[in-house]
Length: 73
Image (tube, rainbow, N blue to C red):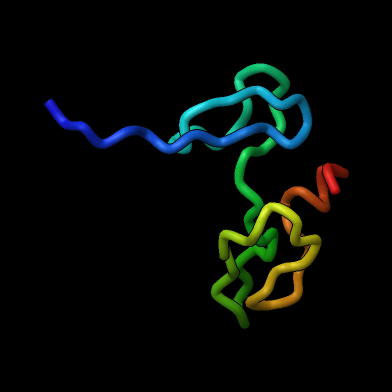
């Protein structure tokens, strides 16, 4: 048996605590990870950088983050 504990995430909308393997809160449906929202296009491969929870814009490309788009910041 492994002694490694699963990391936990706290939903920024409702405060529900969940495993870091989840992408959305099972209590309120809000995203749990603040990823870049830039989609792939013929000229750009897209960006899915995982940003800090307080970031409104992506540190890699400057596009809005998931939390900003959802109105969580």
